[in-house]
Length: 152
Image (cartoon, rainbow, N blue to C red; front, side, top):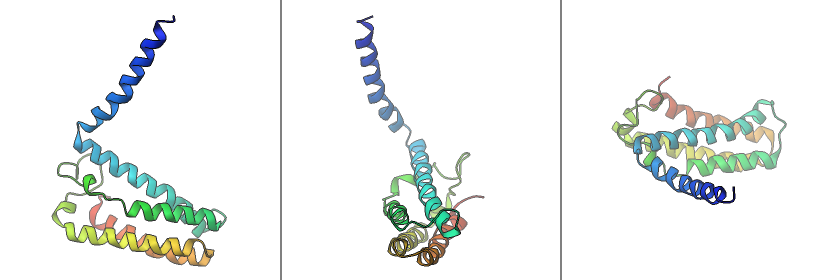
């Protein structure tokens, strides 16, 4: 039994090293996975501030500020590697290939998200009315990109 533990430890170490290497071998799946993870993080944090704005969650300035700061950080991550040829418009994804055909507009929409997220950070720590006001601009920024670049 003592001999099995080192073998199991070695196998576990190999798995830890092999998984990231295996994941890097398919850039299309990596791009899709990164996009989906990024959007899940957006959704999680939007759920917090959106829940407060709608009255489903009690307003808490500190919690709202943290969620807004997370949204701002997410908006400022370089997403270049998420939107690669072959990863758009395929089954299991909603991102449309037109993203690569209109990069200037796509980037402008991302800039709109950055601006709206920064405004949300400024509003989130003040009061519920300010949070609610900033949520409109953020929702508009999200929606403008999704309407143009996401399949239904």
